[in-house]
Length: 329
Image (cartoon, rainbow, N blue to C red):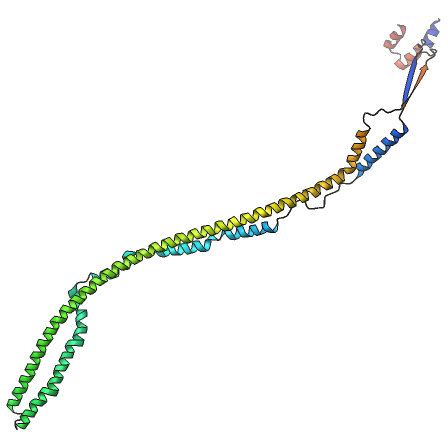
């Protein structure tokens, strides 16, 4: 081989062979897959469907009544408690000592200090009346009789008449004084006994007033406790009734909520139904044999082809020293 042939002609390539194998899917399976992919694509193109139904069950009428009953029961104790406070305040304002004190003060007076109050009515009604009677007796009976005697004797206006008249006045006055003194003594004794009795009665009345006031205080205190207890009981019963209503309402609400949840779950199943069908169809063909036909072909090279010549390699390598060295090798 000449040097030029060496530069212009490449080395001959070795002969090669290749095999091409193709598989054909059966028509029924190809159609099945096409429809499956078309359905999946259509399902993917569907817009989001918001749920327009209610999701949360509202409060029932029993629950609303329970709420209102609870509000009323919360303040149910106030009237009874107000009455209890009033009774307790009234009881606190009472004092047995204060109630009895005026009577004890009057009962503490002495008989001589109050006996004049009893003697004045006695004097006006008895002693003054005795004086009036004595004067009237002297004026209407004694003196006229004495005058008549001296007139019959023809000595009217005489010294003897005047003397006897003076004696009559003296005797009546002395008798009246003695009677008045006796009556004063009896009246003073009676007035003293009456005053002493009244003072003892005042002391007893004071003691009774103190006891009654103490009893009233205890009664008011007991009443205040009863009223406060009634207020608490009324509130407790009201709250208990409201709780029963609320329990009924909660049972109804839970049932209503289950109905709403069931409707929402039905909606979700309805919207997911096409996608579930696609998944079912996709899973149905998994693992099945395709049943297709296979075609094999073979290609054999002639071996008359050549690699690039040294000059072509130099041109592509840019005539570099490394490329020339490789060619020479």
